Image 1: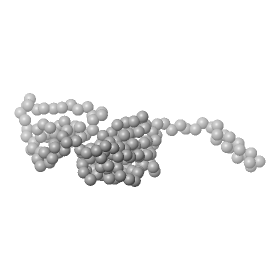
Image 2: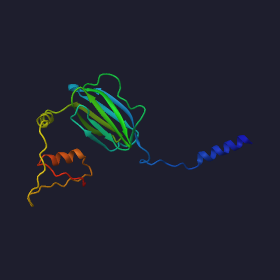
Image 3: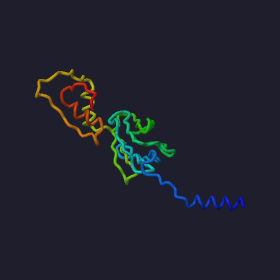
Length: 188
């Protein structure tokens, strides 16, 4: 009798409708990292995710510790840099900041990171030397100070409208900082 009740309960559970998890429920998980040394000391990383590639942004670049961030993502158990020589890349540091997973790439010199989406669930990262033009610009502006704010006469103001749907803050700063000093403003 007891065995019949257990079988009946099991049969009901087997045919009962189950909730289907939608693509957006819960965070995406970074599940794997493969690495290979490329030409000129570059490092090629392939990141695998359990769902469609999350939104990401290269937060800092051309730095000794460039950082990329992934929205609504967590680090899975298999996501670690494989041991061995990986060219210019020495290590990767992970940090979970709320719903954002950040990866910092550590090298012996400033690194440049480029990202390419692959097949919906993968991301290819190429980590190499800072391009010469960026390195020269960085060293040329390292010792210069930002000019003080000065009010301009009416009609002499410049402005730029920047749609932020796909722009990250570094693009906006780059657009705005090439001209004269900009009046501090906390309205976005």
